[in-house]
Image: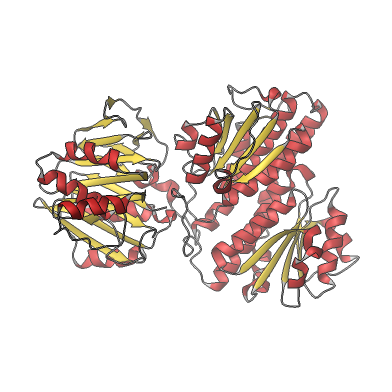
Length: 611
């Protein structure tokens, strides 16, 4: 959500800032801008909408300068417009800011009381930052002294970078609750919302910690903690490169990421499965899994649906009670957290604000903290006792695909490891489940080979106003996820339901124009699912049935579906991972037919770092 890049360069930075912002497009935004120093003065170019507007401005009049900042904004305070676009500036200072300054009205009143001539040109909370710093600069403070004064005054979550008139060799950045990375180059320094923004510029990255602020110059940087004391932070060599974040020969990042799933599922499984012994080996962790009495899973959106699948797996295999909460709701209710409890947090970015705050609440309650994260060194990663790394690699498309299935893979391994630690998973059953997991990358490849068939089925959804997704047991969260995917990228209203709940209300939505996506893997709930689907078909619903060859045969013996997707036969335990893939593909091809912006759907952001 929003993106920042800052460059203290040895060359003109405006083109580099634009390229950096393009690498941050996946985060979601509705306006963009840059600010550079030209002969010591601040020059800005800003535009509403996608980066094409800013790119057009720069093509016509590209500002010079070797020092600059850039920003993609996702609107919070004030509608998308050029005036509300970042960077915000006075004559003396410019800032690009992610997050929310919660006490901005109080601070703004203070600015206008001290300087009645102060002119605010936007509706944003951000603009107050530059005016506060401006007042302190006018009092004779240095930029560094001014920031030391301003930071304690700001309430909320934020990350920002700032440049100053006449200071060609200075950039100041800070983070509290929102991520910011510092990059080291050869005679250059960089700031970015994440390592992806900096990938082609440098691989030497320092992930700033909570409360850190930085005074950067071309020959290095001084880092201070929240108390203003100098600190040393580790610099790591990131594996990210420009090649990793390209689309290759695919039309969209989402398509590429769907087709990367056999590889990344295999990569994730290889870190947790011993194929020779057919056992799961979890990373070393300071948590005694045999003594866990209750698990509280917190996540948002797609990750929350992964948590719902994990609830079925963990309770079924390990016998540990599991509660699944939407992270934004968990924070504000009085949930009992027993002393032997484990907080389990799932996040692709590791920076999801609601999930991070839920983690902190569990930490305060004395819970052990385990997280499933795709981004090393992210906030959730660092604040956890232990982490299961999903190894999905960069996911650029806003609608999650490979991050979701690798989360499922990691959670399946966790369920098995937890059951074994508790002594309730017989070796023969563990070997069978390990073998089933090992088959998944190949089975996913088989589903991807049906791409043309699934693309053809998208025509059945293109004109629909409402689509229903049905499943039972661990297929129910996959129904929820399928509906979410369709909503996110095609803008078609869709709902996911536990199939047994249809008769309790949702069946009223069914008519001859209602496509019904039935997710019906083999297993103990197949006949129940089939019965519920038949009820919908009897009322005119247009059923698209997803099942194995045997399942389709049993369906057709009772009611012929409008269409079918034949799935490989797998152990019911691993079916949720496999069945997530065709619902992704169906949503993707429907969105392509409708001509929507697949990778950057309207109003959405990839990394939600505000409440």
